[in-house]
Length: 342
Ligand code: MRU
Image: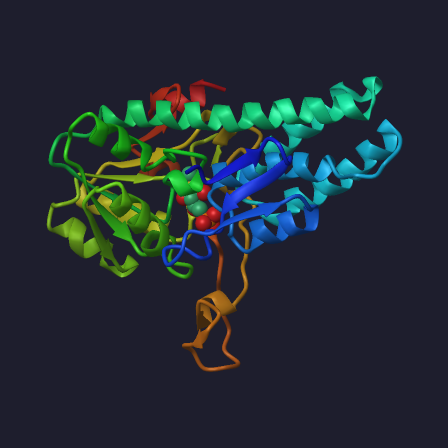
């Protein structure tokens, strides 16, 4: 099953509700813009590529139900949705890129009427969905060339198939290498505060019969010191023009430890994750999230005393000098080679 998809007959966004994993796999639907924003903010759809594809399909599903009578009014309603969606999670570039593509598809068809605008959006949503699958597969093929039989890889958060339509980015090389008959073992950081590693990465790898060892985030240095981690693969939400990379909070700490122990540190991402308009990591907007994610276990059980201050950035920026290479669908680039691609 894909993570997000379009129900072609009902013009409906379908998605796996990731807040319910790993305890139950629940498929939900959406065709309303406010609900879509809520789904993205609650991380029911999450992971940079999945957010982009989900937003594109969801915007199309919502647009099918607009009641505007003229192309101008229809486009005006779309513009309001565009703002709401782009503001819902600011760090990942994929969301803004996908929404821009959908807006351009509608704009190009404006003089032909609303039906043609909707048809153009449908085509573009399909393209975004199909491109995500193909891109992730290519990332997997390039990344798999680095993996030897019997190797252990460490990953943080979830940049697997649940973070995209299929395959994912950081886990794609592991899936491809496994298909090639290599035995790859994965150390998975649990990834506090929302446990994407424990709930999602461990779930999807285990489901694919790939051996997994789950560890708390603060155990990464300990395992790297043993020499058992051959390589680190993480995803990315936005890569600045100088190679600085925003990814799930905790990623930069991992890169610092990896440098200390001489473990190669790779970022896996579609080429479009590189934001050449963003000069350095300092220009990347980091989403700050609700304090309850830190003080409470899954909003249910309070773990910290009331009235305390909380720091809860969703992402951090790994300085480019700590990154061994960036694995994209176009190949594997050092940071220096990446800068030349501009
Ligand atoms: O807050 P999340 O769960 O959306 O964060 C996800 C990550 O940080 C991923 O590593 C990143 O989006 C890349 S997913 C291919």
